[in-house]
Image (cartoon, rainbow, N blue to C red; front, side):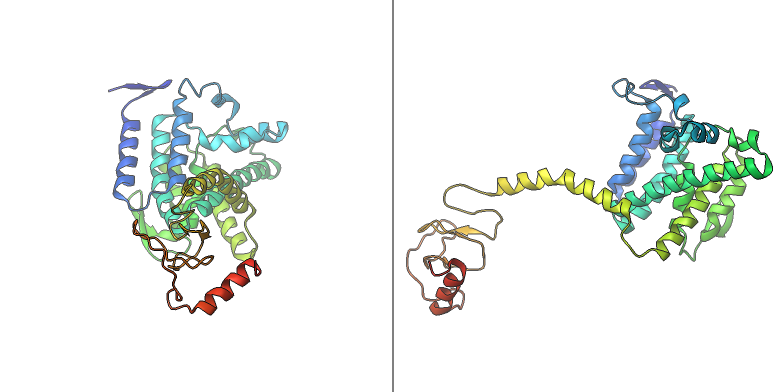
Length: 322
């Protein structure tokens, strides 16, 4: 059964990917947003819906080709090629792998840290692959096989993520039906995928594994803040700031009643805003707090065990004797 989605015709695998993703998020207590965003971005780029078509470069402009990247200093090919896939099976297989790895990593470390890791691994895996292909050209004259090769796909980043995910694991896992230690699963998959799946990018997968190892090495030796993490956190804070401001403004109620958060309250006698919600007596005039609409204008010499002298001292400290 074929279903047209955007400019692509799905043969049933994309609906299964969507169903599986929704099912995983529905069943899980943790719903990692960045993993979902990555899956959505890869899928939308593959489907090329009409409203996004002018914004998405064609695949011919983003193929990862070491020769063209170095010759033209083409950052578009360097950065965007992981998000493109050449077919539905290619996309679905990578996204299912991303779903599982993303759930594990993002749930354990948080969305900002996970986003910084993905960004770091993407740049490292692309850079290592580029250097490997150039080195093979210089030392072994492997131009046709690797230096002029065209490739796309998220698998290099996924191999790097697998290295990071399994770096401390003592368990065993199955790779194409073969049980291997989890920490060596990426190496086993590299060899078996090359033997069993024709046309896969050996150098891209190898670059991903080496990028994962390089990331772990850099993380263990560098104690400072991850600049990519700082950048992502700054972007997230900038996006969230207007919503915090709106919530703060919405929390203030004019007239008599609560101000700001639930802990603050306004005196009905002098209209002073008391920030300490634990006090039942106004710090300005000493009037007993109104609770649930029951008012009392009696003066109190004590507030939750505070003597009147202490209450006066607090007023003097707060208002400078005014």
